[in-house]
Length: 171
Image 1 (tube, rainbow, N blue to C red):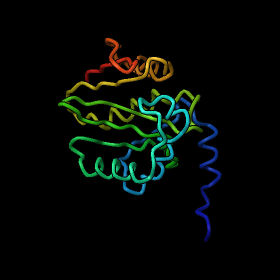
Image 2 (image 1 turned 135 degrees about the horizontal axis):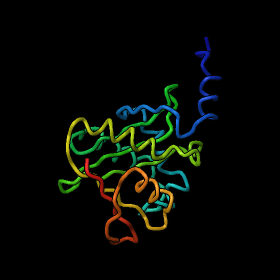
Image 3 (image 1 turned 180 degrees about the vertical axis):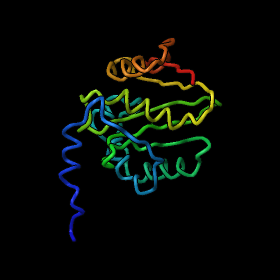
């Protein structure tokens, strides 16, 4: 009565995580707030963020609640294995009539060659027969993310302020 009996399957799915792992995307819920804050404050995520300061609970909760309540301008997807293990998040946010994409991967899922699959799965769910451009703004020295966006078909554009690279993708 204490466990659901699926612990072994969950651990196995984490250990076997790779580019062939089937992923599903679901829309973030209020109960995902703490998980997303944990991912956002991961040291590698902070290092690659344009604002590297640790995010406090109050600031995060205001930010997260605002976005959950404005689904026409922001969609946050939680990416999971078929065993419902959350491995990352992908955020689509509309700014000045353009859609920007941002993502992060849980520390245990890094270096498993899963990021491009994570993004492709999220984009497919978000697309829903719409045509628009996605823009990714990435720090130039975040080589891993730059390679992931190029691998899935984003075209590298001009360098922008903040020591960043801009990638565009036509859906």
